[in-house]
Length: 432
Length: 167
Image (cartoon, rainbow over all chains, first blue to last red; front, side):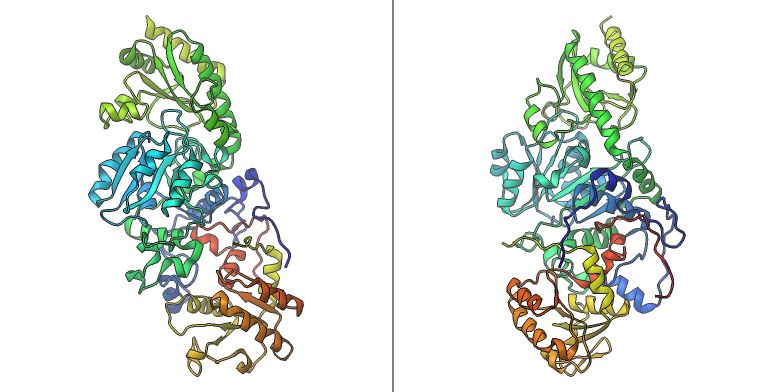
């Protein structure tokens, strides 16, 4: 038989078209917002087939919805995965990602430089499920190997860490995960699939807060878990939820029945069914619109970020800048390898004068918005120690790159000179 | 390990469009087995599926009589779907090659995870189309946008509106 390559279309084409064929009944070209909960069955046999997972189709929007499914397929396509499950937020995506992997008492290893909210979720809230996370400095991959135990079920890291401008060595982490027979989970929120093709570097699962660059306008909360489809869940006895009979489906074994679709099928049919953290169709629609311009925006985000980082690095009131796109960054080489198109637009810098000066800079900005989000078309500024990383201990804050003098920037799409001018006047006011 | 197989959408579409009757070797009468899922789905899409399984011969599966061997299937068969382990596939392929003219067999389809490159070469030399390591249910669903409903990457991009009319 004749053969064709895996992806016939380029990234930009898939950004606009993947998951969104014309709606067959009306011909509507843009993906409709299916603000709808229930879906009519042909008959009771059809309903039974759907509930038994024997056929494809919609039952109830907590599990699947056509607008959300369009976004799922688009993200699966852009990341080069088999399937995706969208959910209410990035935090929901993290629970959903671990849910098929973890039993009470199980462990996973995560980078100690994760976004502060993830450290709190993994370190504190997950303990309520008796899921145990050990945080290690993944800059030295051997730390990860040493932390492995027979109950370790996954390794979790961010491709670009928030807020530190830190890049993970995905290939090295993937080799350790593969050897241990466990998946590598990569939070690709800060890089997006445009900058970092994490599956190509060995990730098995990718999570996103779609709220950030994917949606791109600070309008719509969402999360997503994408499965590469290449991890063999039955290679050991570590993943009974996927490779042992499931009682609620009369002894069906997900890995056997669904093959490379097992993880994503489980995430909808068990994960969303019982965790209930479904994405709203309106949010899926807004995120689909955002993704249509992802490559253009990410290129501009990166150009502006490099411009602002270079400006700050030259500034006499700035103590240091941590942006992996700068020659001075210790992560420059990793950034060049894993995200050659740019190191993202979120990074940190330190103001001379420490905590007080830092607060003054943030409060003096007039164009950059002082708020807790990132990946917006607008430039954003934040003092992590007093906000996003506030729940952490001093020690954890330092490890996470969120010490008292640290200011986090998420550089937007405005005119570069206007962004640097605003920072210039804010730094001046902070010095006076 | 051998290279993953790739088949063009056009080729799969034409195999699935031309077949009407499928002999499913290894069809199970157990409603919770993958072969039962696939048989039920293909029936729902309009295919006639004849189960072949010596352990279930004489029983009915989803309204169809089950036969012990391909040779016993009393009607013409367009496509033979092999729902058995890879090491059992070769003998079934050889049986299908021997019966190809008598039954009108045009395609050998080996299920997801089932692959025998030697048997495939013999079938192709005999003029049969061969698909391996794929599921006709998944491929039908993928090509008709149903797989996308579950958040899966169908790899299909099209600006065409699908028609609703009699063929």
